[in-house]
Length: 555
Ligand code: ATP
Ligand code: MG
Image 1 (cartoon, rainbow, N blue to C red):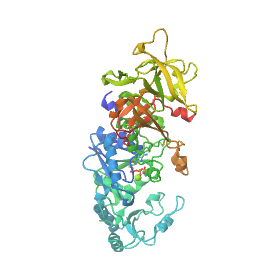
Image 2 (image 1 turned 90 degrees about the horizontal axis):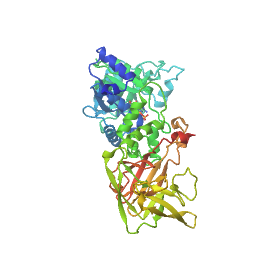
Image 3 (image 1 turned 180 degrees about the horizontal axis):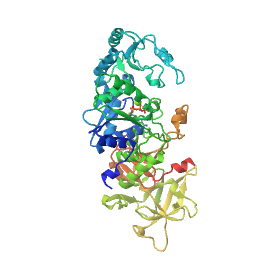
Image 4 (image 1 turned 180 degrees about the vertical axis):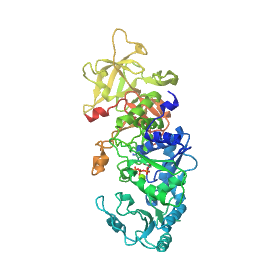
């Protein structure tokens, strides 16, 4: 498939194609405009892939701009994590990182411009009164008594706001539009408010901050953005953005136009920074990068690759249709990637000991196993075999029918990449728990079929002499209901068993694993080494199981 043919098509790209054909633009300029008030989540990844993807495919530009108008909710940690996540996803913004706060001087001048044209006024109603005066969807609002103050009085009052002469909530600047507009956003929206807050970029220079809506559209225009792409909840705000850009004494070229697409909603999780923030601050998860979080940082720690997330964004597409995407869709993308690329290894998550009585106690044999059975080029790894090995507790039964193709007392099974063993007898502790399974092995079965009999089952194992102790963190869905965001209290829908920890062993080569390195642990799923690991304490996160179990779980 040619590169052009593999490009996604969607209604936004069609608009761009038409704009280019009609000569409305010669260069395409998009941006990704996060507020630095949390870590990026999988929904943002959709927006990033769309905005940066368009810039790449049309040889245009895409800015990374922080819409940082809310200093109390923002911090530099968020600013840094967002840059890291965008780059990790495989994108690079044009030029320097942009900040709306870099335009605070210009925004202030634009506010004065509106006041001078009689299109903005300083209001002294309290925030509560402003709410009451605004009316409702069925009732028009009321004009503020300060709406018709003179231009001079407004200029003077706005200057006083800037000089810090009003307390927070005692004065604000509002656009003079229409208190009976059917669009609530046009009922004299607040443009500036007083906030005695330190800003992570502009420091203590300002005690008035422009509102998001006023800032966002002007920032796009100042940056020469041609297509301002955002999610559907900003559809009504577009009317305000158009009003602001059309009423300032400026000839914008290019004049940005906004196009809305539907948000990504993912089943069994929430994609709202506010809700994710509350999971972090209230201790439901270990942090923004907890592997159960749908954040880019959480997915990375869980073992998701940039490729898998970009592929997911491609598969879900871009439309105006509100929808809920199944988790299985995201998991299929990482499974496809890791199935192809992850080296294979063996690990036993819930170990029980095997003692092979006819194998010499002091012997350690080095065996070879493929790193990837479908890709010889990845080479081989060394594994050691010895008299004592660990297998999964669930891979042994004292009795079983023919369907159970694992180790059964008195029967044989193959140890993957090694010999056929036979379970001879078992030892139990006082609680009736099996402590040891005593076996014999057939020395003629290394890489060869056993003589005169069939052994169907193959199980994984590690050598007790050389295996390294490891912790395995297994994750389940974070919420118990498909749409926790719709619940009255989404905290109540949290799955109390979303993390289970097991202590077992991994084959010895894994002491060299790097943080983030992915493996397929045979029969157990895809795992990656967690940053909490230490040299003597390996911790693996299960990224995803080998097969889709979601459908089964929901039965
Ligand atoms: P949240 O509700 O999570 O706080 P937000 O819209 O306030 O999200 P921003 O930082 O303002 O977060 O978002 C930056 C960009 O990402 C915006 O253009 C927004 O439309 C887009 N975006 C946010 N959430 C999603 C989502 N779930 N799906 C697609 N795009 C999204
Ligand atoms: Mg927002």
